[in-house]
Image 1 (cartoon, one colour):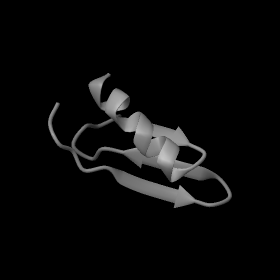
Image 2: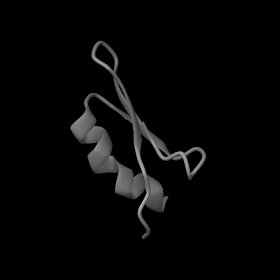
Image 3: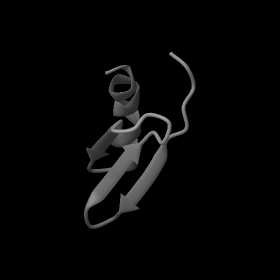
Length: 46
């Protein structure tokens, strides 16, 4: 697996969304930043 930049959108009242700009549609929504980042390797693989 290569290296990708991950962009985070954090809204304290809503949660966090992480997505990879180089991979359209590759994103993950979570309750917090740590959970979103921990799920990104699987999202990138999928």
